[in-house]
Length: 241
Image (cartoon, rainbow, N blue to C red):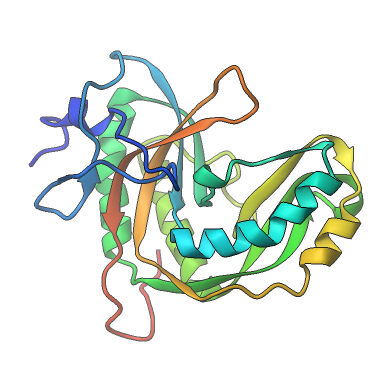
C-alpha cells in the first residue's frame, strides 16, 4: 500500500491504551507497520513529532513503583505522566503533513535495517547538571551501541526529507524523562536515591512516530501515528546508519 493513498489513515489518532500513550491502532499493513485509523489532521497543519521506543508495561510498572515515594518529597518538580513514558530516539519539531508522508517510508527502512535491542533501565541523571537540573531522568543499560545506531538512522531519515532533529550532532544520551523543573533545581538527592537501580531487562522491538499534543495542563498527550517492527536479530552486529 502506498503512503500517499493512506495518508489520512496514517495521521489520525488511535485509541489509547490505559497504560501507555504510544500504542498504535490495530490497523496493520503488508509491510508490518501499525497505523492508526480515523480522520487525519487538516491539510497543512503542523504537527509536533518525535520518534521513540515504548518500554513494556511491566518494566514501567517497576520503575514507577521505585519513583512513587520520591514524588511526594519533591512537589516542586513536574513529574511526567507514567502512561506516556517512552525513550526518545529523535525529536523532529514541527512537521507538516506532506513532509510526514515522505518521512514514513524512511522510518520504515530505518527500522528494517536494525535488529531488536536488549535494554534495561538503570541509574539516573539530570540535564544539564544535577545541581541545576531542568530534567531528571532514568538511564539505560544494555545494548546502547545498537540503540545509538538506530537513533542515527532515524535522524538521517528525518534529515533526508528536510526535517533534521534540532539536536542532531549532539551525543545521543538514551533516557526516560521522570520529571521537569520549572526553575533550575538541585536534584542531587533524587539522583542518589536512584543511582543503584538496575531494572528488568526488556527488548525494544518497534519504532514509533509520535505526535505530541500540548494542552491546557502541564502534561502533553502523546499519540502514535505509525510504528514499524525492528527485524528479528539474526547476527551479532547491526549495519551502520
